[in-house]
Amino acid sequence: MVTVALIQSDIRPHDVEDNLTHYEVLLKDKIQEPVDLIVFPEMFNCGFSADFDQHAESMEGRSVTFLQKIAQRYNCDTVATLPIRDGEKIVNRLIWMSPDCVRGWYDKKHLFFGSEQRICISGDKFTIVESSGQRWLPLICYDVRFPVWSRNAVQDGQFLYDCLIYTANFPEPREQVLLKLATARAIENQAYVLVVNRIGYDGEGHAHAGGTAVISPQGEILAQTECHQEEVLMYSLDFESLRQYRASFPVSKQWD
Image (cartoon, rainbow, N blue to C red; front, side, top):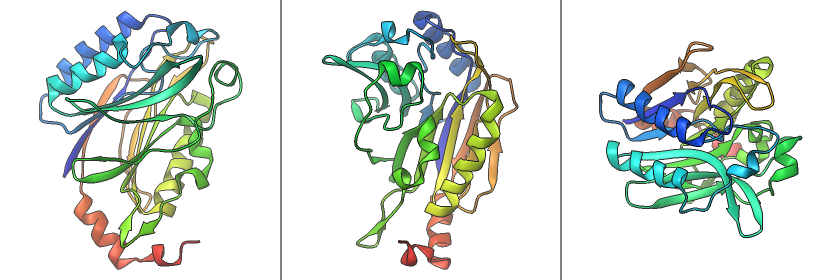
């Protein structure tokens, strides 16, 4: 079993220091048991706004350092996205941090039209992360609409990944779209899917209701947060049952 903590929180626009401090308080209050993975929503440190590029930092910046501090404090891995300045470009980068080092990162492939497309450069490859004895594919928000980008595969008897993660800033009017698409991704790839979405208003006035959830490979919502409420959703993923399901229903042998 692998225990995950999914952070459904508000993100105050432009207030990086306050957001990071708030996460510390929230985690201290809500996490009272061992955890293997903590996942924050997209743009966890500053949220989206018309000029979020002013908060772009390096891989040695305070928000990245914060992720490692939390990983060390709870002896787990942490996952979050934030604007990173990479040379002359800015990317929406998902960072997978262990207590010791960065396990991997992913620069968002599918940028949403508006400020994100104007400010960020698109990534061109995804990253498989090995952690807690499993293989994970972490993706970001709008990526959920592009099924080929998350296509699972079997190579030498091993699945490309066992769990798909979407960190998100999906606005309230399209919250159900996020969950329906994520459910489809779980079914078609025979993998768990974790959806981590924010609440509150972003810097462009868009409302977010949450909808953070754990979805089974069969498309069942195993756990879900209440809308509009700040919450840490704890859930233990049973990967042995996943392996049994894949063996009993070997649709992967006919994947295109």
